[in-house]
Amino acid sequence: MPWLVRYPHRVPVLVDRAELRRLHGMWRFRRFLPLAEGEEPVTLGEGDTPLLRTARAGSRLGLHDLWVKDEGANPTGSFKARGLSAAVTRAVLAGAERFVLPTAGNAGVAAAAYAARAGVPVRVYAPTTTPRTILSQILAFGGELVLLDGHIGHCGSAARAYAAETGAVDLSTLREPYRIEGKKTLGLELALQLGWRLPAAIIYPTGGGTGLIGMWKAFAELRAAGWVQDSLPRMYTVQSSGCAPVVRAFDTWAEQCEPWEAPETVASGLRVPNPLGGRLMLQALRESGGGAVAVSDVELEREALAATREEGIDFSPEGGATLAAARALLDRGALRPDERVVAFNTGAGWLYRDPSGLPPV
Figure 1 (tube, rainbow, N blue to C red):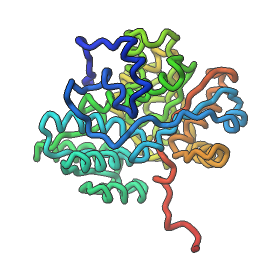
Figure 2: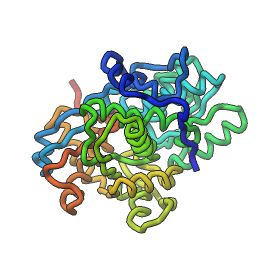
Figure 3: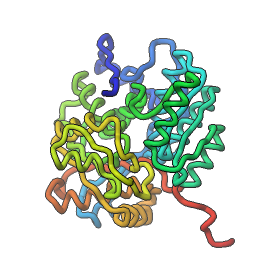
Figure 4: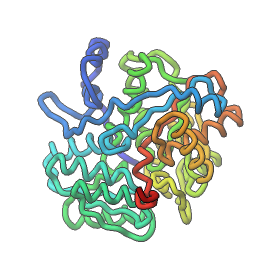
């Protein structure tokens, strides 16, 4: 079971909430984060990503109050910036001298960038099928890139072996407790942007699951601090039908995910066949009264392209999956047309596109 951080001697109060408006970025929530007085984070200005009303896409899908939280606006192009900022910060303050990370894509970019910011080397293991643009970004930030055949599970085994051999800090999803702390700022920031009123439902694309787990943790902490009074949102996870261990476990009332055989999807962030946080994800989905849905690659790519052109938001395949899921959830009656729904675009679409395919100028 993964470790989770608690702050028993730190209770944010409403005065702290009032102070947030004059601060900026993810670390404005430092009262909820693993940073002691006098410590400074390793930061690139992550957070403060747009929360955008998507009237045209919503109308097409049948949702009258659909919003998109666009995490592609983060410094490294995805929501991974939040978790890696927190993880690298805490590790460097504890004396880390080397990092290692397995990645399906965007986490590797963020790890390379934040390691560079901290002045600490990082080795990144990635599948050979990772989008070329993402791999080039890892190299651009100075990460030592090792490509392996297979999926992120194979990369994880190699990363753990390297950590054992060299003493490098393993930044793998849920193998250290601080990436969740960074990811929970997704929920803290969403509450701030909505005036401390939470939406009825959240649709989130799930691979490793730190964002889903982190947001559910954040909402509980906000309620405990008295910062929100609403009912908590129903949490819905979306996966690709080519790799859907969480959906299968949810639908069968299992307590844990079983490994998905032969995972295959164009949404590289969703190609996680055996998520370590499966039990925690299932717990959040069930406690919230939400659910899980799988969509095909054809559906998620179609929605990403359509919404990018409708709204001017650069949807990744994972972001497209949330819109495809919104349609499916509405059709099955899990969502109502008039509810406020927030879908997450967890990364920028440009990271997945091969510029060599462009026509000559």
